[in-house]
Image (cartoon, rainbow, N blue to C red):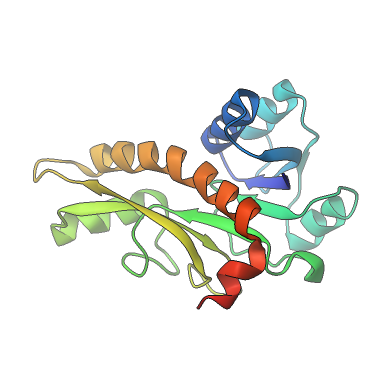
Length: 191
């Protein structure tokens, strides 16, 4: 079972998903702490309501100081919109989800709605999500898994976002379970 810290920047939709799946027994993880880099976001209120320790931290140094007080072996970036530099002990244990099929539509500036607008502008017939380990460059760490969704020509960026988020809700927990089953080093050593 993975002992997770969840980092977020907004509403906490992914935190909701994790919480529900842990309660249902389909996600082999325990949330030890939730940290947001934006004060007062809904995700922090949800964390408190779920009973998780919840903190606001403005930068990596503050985040890492908080993490030092918790027994964590995986950091899940759940809508965390900054490049994160973990402590050395967690350097290879930061898992992110990206709302596109890496290596397409990724890197600096490609997050959230920007991704879906770019997918639409390019006329893609598929999109999806990628769960990957994070490193010092945006969207460059080893891929754990990807899920694809078909797009219709008439889909708007908002409709693409809805389709992609639906597969994200399946993919991120599945990826955490894969990491739990295979170990973190498996994914770093296979590429």
